Image 1 (tube, rainbow, N blue to C red):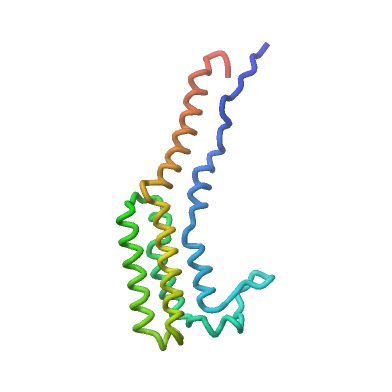
Image 2: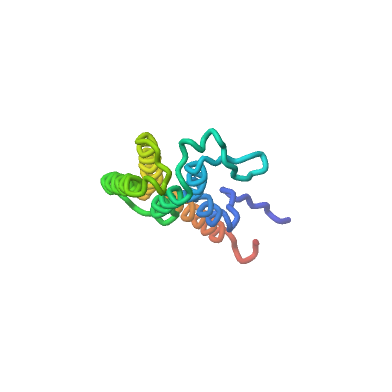
Length: 169
């Protein structure tokens, strides 16, 4: 008669670690933001279309592209799994916001800037996105979560292998 063994913890499928890394996608909101800065919104078919009411406060495609590229410099998996201090995060967020403002001022005609409120609006968006994306990496937050997941999976497998004997499988 075979003895039934129970697994103390459910073993995650091998792809869980990769799935976890795939879910960390801070650049996705940047792509959405780029479209919205141009006064576009998603329709029912999942297509970005220009909203005529939003067009008055939007910026040009080149302006949205440049602001998005600035944000993409930090909105990455690499940044999310880095180890940054609060001081480093705040310094970088301020620097990128300052760069965005200078860019908006220097290219105001090309970017379709018609009033100072647009500059303040974009600056607040840039600071918020940079700050929030970089806060994920404060004190290795995301990295520790991933490492914790990996070590827990490894521990469960190791314990199960120890319990198996030559005659029982």
